[in-house]
Image (cartoon, rainbow, N blue to C red; front, side):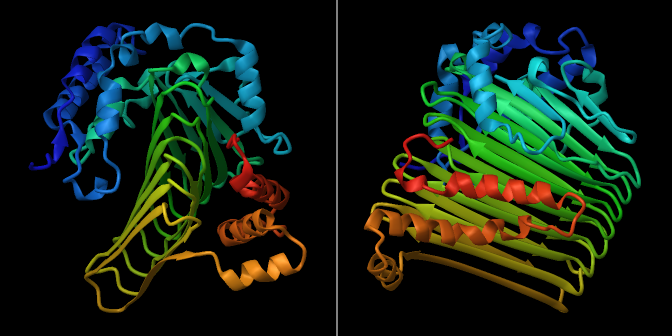
Length: 455
């Protein structure tokens, strides 16, 4: 049997027709036309199949079946009604980092939730919500020639989103938390949101984005983020995924860096049955720097897929990738990291490291690092490993009085600790915030082996 490159999903088009009059901005012709064109582009291809190289480790057949279910898209109004506020508050308390006293913006089942939100309120910082002002997102929703099928689907079905803009020379005084919650009412729902972050010249900001939901329902969260970092600007962007056991979680992040810009991104994947994180970056100005760090921990029925691409388009740029994975029995992961160095991108420095720890012979880790180098004066390295726990280290810890389970827990925590090590920076103005965030990420991995509930 020949495997198809793309999977047909005719039900998606039919469900779109049923839902389109209830979408945000349905009364605005430009947005309705944009949605229709995006859906046409998606329907022309469908979902990426097993023959699409970038998706070879994550078969989206399960997503095609999910989208084919009538309840997945017909009951659009369910996510716009007022859900159980007690459940929302409980989920919010698990996601919110209370010791970071900055603004917080909450989305519930793909829609802005004002009751628990406090927007940024400082000079030089502009924050917008898509459902309140769709016209302000016109440029960020514009069609792109190379949009992926899932990006087209998101543009067609987007329910809400945010736009953070920081003016030149402005440093946000506190990090902003963006929290996406799925409730028990999200069962069978596909939740499509978008984010846009734009930093003008010499601006600085920190963004913490969390995704959390209950274990019972099956839902799909689909987040598209676009990041623009202007000359000498600096953005630190952290994403924490704590979805329910049956959730499908897919994010796609695009960043463009200009001269001497810096972009640091950290990603921790713990929840969901199937998760995929795409991080696509363009170093479009000289002396730009990007750092990508991430950890993913998976066990029975869980699949984590990390796909990165860094385009070194200009000279004297630097990129660093550091990813760590831990897989217990029944867990599966994939890391696909691609670095492309253009012909004129001399003096490039690019490092890539991916290490995976298997705790069971029934776990699976896939690693596919790639370097495509068209310049001749560069320094580029990559490395990938898959291994088991060191028996000598395990014996040493047990000889010091730890039982086997506690010893394994400690070794797992130490293995992923390197990913979070750079978050602690007491020399910065907001160094305390980074220490708190480092503790948060560490706490989520501590005791992971013995925990039933991820969050």
